[in-house]
Structure formats: structure tokens, C-alpha cells
Length: 301
Image 1 (cartoon, rainbow, N blue to C red):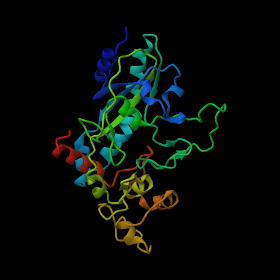
Image 2 (spheres, one colour):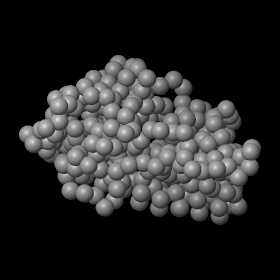
Image 3 (tube, one colour):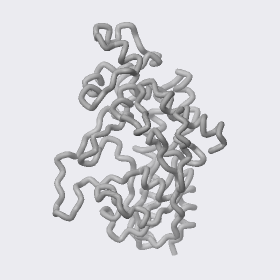
């Protein structure tokens, strides 16, 4: 008989650093395009798994020693390689017991219809604005889980001021995967509250001023993730030398939107092109480092 204990044991054995199981009732009220029941109508729960990103990968970016290792071993490898193997193994465990397992990893380059945000980690995103529902009562494809909602439902953590999910052991240094299943598993309590105390450290650390009380402006973040700030060690005197807004851009004072950010992207290629589609993080994830260090000092991790 498949139990929550077996699921958690297998998940840890296969490489997860934390596991939680959220009752499907925790998703009542979410939009159809985010609802796991629209993926698997008979779903009883969602299994959530956390993978840590080694904290030293952040520190070497902060110290301007390395940049590619975070990109390739963190977002790229965990989401695109390790997570897929992990999810397929977990699906096999569940299906061998006669239940369904719809595995969900981070879809880095897609946004549901109406979501105009972007993912700063990759070359660009595509909004599914031409998708159509197959019936009036059906959601518009693709259905993409809200990982912040799912993490809270599974008792694993919750988004902080920056919008990044904070976990009790690893803070923001994590990636997530989820499995929607109809297996009758004992569920964990949802994560209560949030580790974030809205100290504003993430806001102050961002060189592009992309974080405010309203959360993260992803297009603003994307420009400075790519290195538009003076703190970028690859910055040259020739960068935007004829642009009247050069100083405003380098100081993080210019506000970017979807159109102006994309227009600047070709000029932000400070390191060689990446065939993977991921861009190196030249801001060093200063927001996450500041958050992690504050949480440690405050005894919240």
C-alpha cells in the first residue's frame, strides 16, 4: 500500500532535500489555469519537493569569482535535467501502485495567457496568448501551477517580499517540483505565515531597484540580472556610451517594461552566448543573498 511515508522516503532517496504533501482542498479558489484539478480531475493531493542550490554558488557570484556555475548547476541543471529524472522515478513509484502521477517541473520559458511577466533567468519568455479553450467551461491551455501557492499548500514555504519562495532550512536558495496525484496520501498542514518579515533587505540589495512593496518587477529584474548595473564586473566604458540615459540605466534609476527591456537585451551580452537558453546572473542574486543572510542572523532559518 502506498503511503505518505513511502513517498517521502523515496523522494529523499532520489535526491530531494525536503518533501511535503498538500491536500487538494488547499487549491480551492485558485484560477482554472493554475488549478491542479484541471490537470487531474480526480486528484487528492499535490506532492511538493525541494532541491537546494548550494549557497556557495551564490557567494562566488557576490565575490565576482564565478557566474556560470550558479546558472548551469542551479536553475539549468536542477530544472532541466535532475528534476526530470527525479520526477520520472517518482511517477514510476506511484504508478506501480495503480495511481496516477502528473509530474510538474518549472516551465521556465512559458507564461499563461494574461501573464505579462517574464523569467529573468532565460533569454526570453513566451506568453500563450493565442491559446483557446476547447469548451466554454474549460481552462485555456497550458495549465501552469502557481509554485508559490503549491509550496504553501504542501507545507514547504511561502513567497517573501520579493516573490521568491522562502523555505525554513534553505531560505530562497531552492528550486521546486510538484506531482499531482490521485493517491490517497496523508497530507501535511499548509505552511503558516511566512519567513519574510518584510525587512526590505532584498529591496535594498537589488542594483536595479526591481523590488518594491508590490513585489518584484520581473522586466526590471531581467535587465539587471543580465548586468546593466555598474556592479557588473564585465562593464566597459563603451557600454551605451552614446545613450543619453546611460547613467540612469547604470544606476538602476530607469524603469523598464516589456518593450524597453527586450530592446536592451541584445546589448547585455557581456558573456558568451548560451546554447541552453539560460543567461548568466550578473547581478549575483544580491536580493536572495541579502535575504538569506538576514534570515540567518534573525534566527529564522
